[in-house]
Image: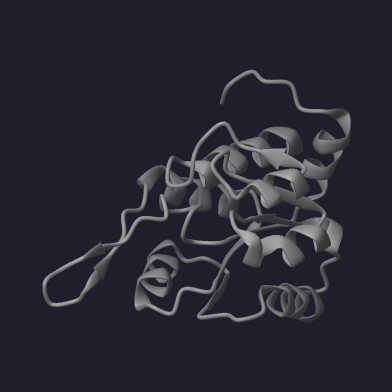
Length: 169
């Protein structure tokens, strides 16, 4: 983890987090899609983000994916990493976040969300800690509490996992 300064307000937000939710394309991936001749889609994920899921689980922090992606790739990755909450092919991400909150007794302040594009704005406005990679859409960057030093697909999730763990020790 680098030694950049975290504001006191964001430090306090990080301390309250019980759930880290993320988008897939543009966060866990670089947003690129590879197509085979047969029309199959492939995406590249970083194993270090997977370790972030494991480390959060060991500290009692829940994790989840909420993605508009309708391909089975996001679900496969979520299943492999054993995310606690898996929602893909989602039209309204905010409804999914509210469902997680109501069904599990969380508050919005206990939820962190990592998003990168305009379809994430409602969630980013709603949660206690809004985060995006440095290459997110400009409207998203303006809304977020934290902008990571990494681009999407370059261990954004792991960076935030480490911050949460660090602040809660």
